Image (cartoon, rainbow, N blue to C red; front, side, top):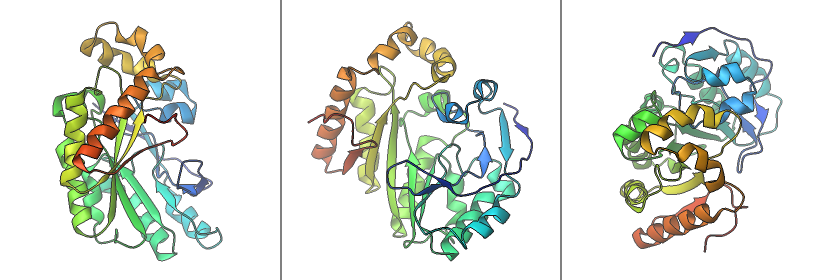
Amino acid sequence: MSVEYSSIICKTALSPSKLPGLRYSLNPYRGCEHGCVYCYSPSVIGDREFAMNWGKVVHPKQNIVEVLTREVKRKPKGVVGVSTVCDPYQQLEAKLELTRRCIELLSRYGFDVSIQTKSSLVLRDVDIIKPHGFEVGATITTMDRELAGKLEPGASPPDARAHVLEEFASRGVETWLFFGPIIPEINDSAESIKKVIEMAKRTNTKIIYDKLNLRRWVLDRLAPVLERERLGLTKRLPALTGKKLGWWLRTCSLIESICRGLEVKCEPAFPSWPSAL
């Protein structure tokens, strides 16, 4: 798949974040080459045309390092999420090194950095990402390489992401596995869930899990994959993931039961969800 690149200028680098555990977010790119069909970041950006071309258009923020250089000197310290609406280690990062230069700055000025990625490119920066001041999370939705390729066409395969966790854990860096989004009838079977949890066990990594978020335009992009995998699921999905939460409570119970059995730490991404226990 060809990707269109064009640079943009940003006014700020460190944006306030409402995500648990984060004071700021930092996104060196607008758009993401991984093109994950379930991603709700386009709805956060709020541009339908951009959303429907998610994965095909990427705008690197050409001045983000200069802006961050000013902000780290005057903004209060806090945990910075890198990144929250794009992958900080998408393919273009190998060339531009915007993420690398930003996390180096953040570390130098005493900001803690929480990295979340689906890319093995993060291993390039092992010289910067140290046990103190950094944590690395890898998103894994399934250990099924073929299914992952359909859901996350531009991301590193699941076993490569597992290696990311193994490598950083072996270096003493705090790691976590983001298990999500969990999608009804796609990656929510006991077998599929157990494989992810077994991988977390092997890498001695805690799990943070979450369900599919059907924000604007997500279903439009997800539907072709759903219909190839489970005919008719597209129509049923809003009800399954809706407010009644019956499916989600059962899935939470299953995850936590398997985690207890394998002695793997786990927690929901958003603790405000009704308890599954």
